Image 1 (tube, rainbow, N blue to C red):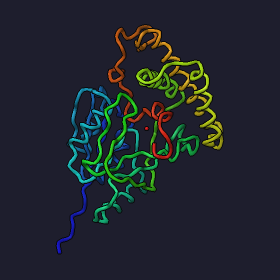
Image 2: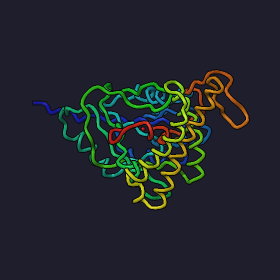
Image 3: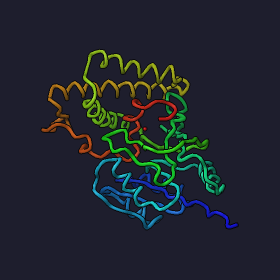
Image 4: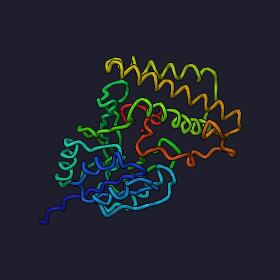
Length: 297
């Protein structure tokens, strides 16, 4: 009897101006059968760094997170796909777990797997406040999953049963507090544009939702166990929620226009897909408050 061939693994990544992160990400997946990179207009050395690791580097104009990730999926030829963001790294333990899954050389009844993600801030792993295990659906059979083309909160829509892996994916997100606060403002714009399509501003939401976010992160999800970093993150995430409702209030007053800078406003009804590109994998502030645990964004 002829033995089954070991399933092949494709890694897909989208990039733009990720020179600071991409080498670490690519080095962690050199063992994969193929690595596919879709670059959406880098102005730094990202594409040349990627070509050190793989010839499969494609360049397309930016059309939104989901569409760009689906472009990468369409290039994959492996039996399984591991979708990564440029600021993520496959841990040695996760590599071993994925290889063991492939080495079993049997048909699993799972079409995809959630992977726990360890988020690092200020050089340390934040273990509480909703930041761990932060499950992400990233490993799935080719053809079983596709990224839903939404303006924000892009996520995989997948057919079939799902399982959970144990080993972590590392995520190096914000450089420092300034970076976090800057992105807080940009993410709030994306989230407000999304909210504008489905709910209206109320004073209760403006006051209650930020307070609820702080209580959830710092107390219910035990962010206090991470000390000062836990308090800072719970406070900033609460402020982000406050900010998105302020921006929603502004949008309603402008009839749907969303300010892009302090000096100018969009003159037409907002299309969130046209908003300025945010670095790959750094929508966690937008996603985190909208998704449930542990399935998770």
